[in-house]
Length: 256
Length: 349
Image (cartoon, rainbow over all chains, first blue to last red; front, side, top):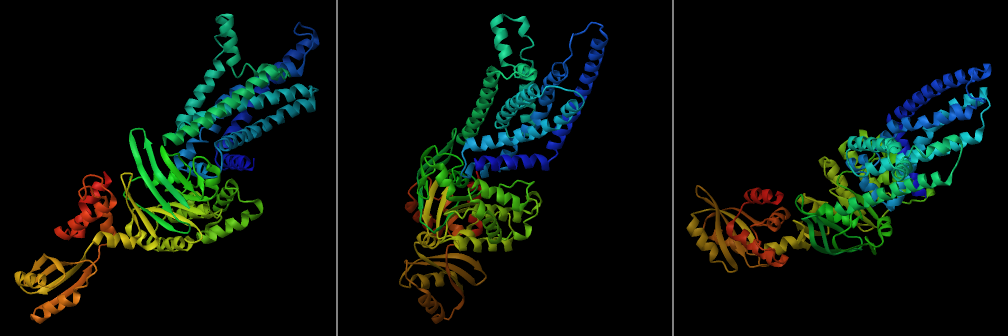
């Protein structure tokens, strides 16, 4: 465990001494802020209409109408930022030869992969922490319920974990960062749009496509529901990607 | 301490290391000599557990690198060909990180980091970023990294590559000091280095072991006979006849003629010193003896002889190979300069 933390810590530090951490967190903060403002205007309009009785919903709920869609929008931010986080993790070590240090140190492959994953997750955690500012405003000036917000954050953390573990796997396959970044982005995009054609297909295909979509599983979390079905999906997705990464690193050894 | 048994490593159709076996005893400094692409780095990577062998076994500090990789790695320090540095970290941060992943207990970390920086002479760069260091300092930080957890076995891949002459001497001194406490394997393609630092040498070429011995023994094994270089101011035929008449002399060959001055290479039976007789034979005849010196084959020549394709076409056992090339050198008077060209180029293919 100490080894894992040592690697995670080094990984996290290296994000912050390079521009990556600042670009990722800055971009995420701007986009989240923009989504927040636009949803806030919308919420304002709807609650005004409800107040004067011009149709609209009978009750307006800040969780349902603002926080929940806001969380769902975060997947767009992740699509663009997380490839930047993972693209260099393995590629850079392979290119510069530091991978030799890790592979000849008394560490298991699992420790190395898990350490890198935790490092990326910590950066992502910092990115999510910035969004607490906006949510904080809602608590200061409104009265949203906090348990659904907490569930939403759990969902976001798990969804980000899926993207990160997948990106880590792609990065372990190449020594070129740009290739790693582009391929990761393409794979993320595919997982994001995979259920767009779901409604045009038969019930079985529809079920499969919806189940595969990383974003689809966030819906319940965003609404404040922690369903074991989605929990199992996210955790097994992460575990499988990390497993593939370990295998990729190991096979690289055999092939030289 | 280190035992390599029938080690073979193939990358697809390419055989990088072919049935290599050797043993290194505790405290020994063992040299790995071979041209580029001979399989030195591959062998070292197998020993450090970086990659598994295709066939054969490697045992480091009593642990098989394939069956007990963690135990073996705990006892091994490795300096790869390019020092594995993170450019964005300071030297101290970097070494502290290495101490963590190598399992140095928290309490000892600071002491060990300081000690290894002192030993590798990088203490003055402790707060510099690794990416800003010169090649020489990078190499030394790499060495500090290998020494950090005080391993029983040190594996150094070309430790003096890219250093200036002063740093090379310092590094060699350091390696010599490390022998005894540590078992050291170092690779190089620079021959004098082996003679100066190593107690035993393995010469490998195209993945195969050509010879394993001490630098001194390699030299004498190859000579087989003693050869003298004699320069005489007299006609060549007379001198040749006179020299050949000396008991113990097996062969006299003309090496060079400049005006009336002739140079000869005189071979004699092994272990028999004919210098006095040679001198007497020349001087009593009233000729001028201008030069008389023994020709010792340098390691450089050994290396070239051992790794040249012409010296022995079929891969024979090392002993046969050695004597064959020794004869060739005695007969043909291939000057070192000439010999250096062709085999050198061949070796790079």
